[in-house]
Image (cartoon, rainbow, N blue to C red):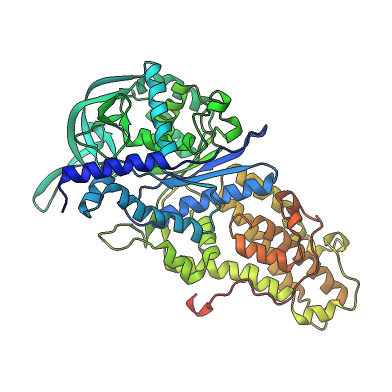
Length: 555
């Protein structure tokens, strides 16, 4: 095996090569700010799990919704992998690999997950790309030129797995198998006492401005409980942030400009990915990133990295005079059968396996239906996945088959076709479904505007329940049901399917497209505005289309 020094040398040369050969073209300028949304950039020290898929699907729901809400507005949707730091360095060493090869091997799994889950990201950024490395160096120099970086002694409890220092108030001593050690009470990760001379960022200088920002923008962090957490955190004094590590300790990272003895702290590197992915430092527009999409409209993050995104990153942006992210959408974690996911326990949910077994859209539906309120940890269970899969298959798939059945077609053939719900009389039996469909699109949009994904989906489910109930009560297939009534019911249910099909596009893109195709709805009549009650759209309906090709015995 190569010596450690040789391995470090190889890693460094490979990293320099990577940073020198990769780049992206700059999009054309525009007067319209693109909608910009990001996921966390994932740490490729292990294969993706269900938490990664959840972040991706939530961001994709909002990206698709943005396209449907304003089809003429560009969307920038960034995901990627965070490939520097001591955790990567150590994991690669444990496998006898250089860090770059290790990242190459694992990063592809995240790309494959994005493709598998039908996530419409527009860019996948790796922090080992040349453009990103250059952006990090530029950002460092800008902060330094403003007098916001200095060298000083830093001591504290450091977690390699979390790549951060923890204050003594968040550290506890524990004992296991006769061995005493310290852990973070926040993450449970093991911490070690470190003391060294590092570069520091004057984070403390931005305490008042950050507090004022969040006081003036109560919607800046969603759900509100996480906004309150950050406001409370800002009541305590902020310490200046250590932003480098000795090169002797950490070789795998971007060198500090003009000081090869230090490596830039991985979180400074990682957080810079959000502007670098839309071509920061925007030299062509004198540092104005508006036409590239800056600032982000939404950043989807897990609650464990809230402090980095709600305090460290905004302070960096304020230091640079850049606009801050409009909304941080913070989600809680997934458990498995009510237990925390753990590789050692062997209960890490495999998202690829779940999608292979039931299909992509049923898994996406479950993630949004169960995990779309974001406030509390939620459970990934096969039983619940099957339950919610049966729910949408019945409410949507079976409803379409029932409404286009040969028996109903025969009943309505004797009366003029109802082209839309406007020709359906105002009968009391139809009132509940009419009311639900009139309110559906506005209710859905109100929930989406408040980042209430599960509630938006619930509105669709309730409308589908009303449609199914009307079908059962009116029995349009029955011989004693007047043909005119059968035609009225079919027209209203077609309208329900049309509206719900449009609104389900961000959640279940393939099944929603198949439904709208089967209803004869043209590509140009599928925007959010088209989901209003009574809008034209139903064309030549194709009967008998099975929306869900699932072995029901598995459910």
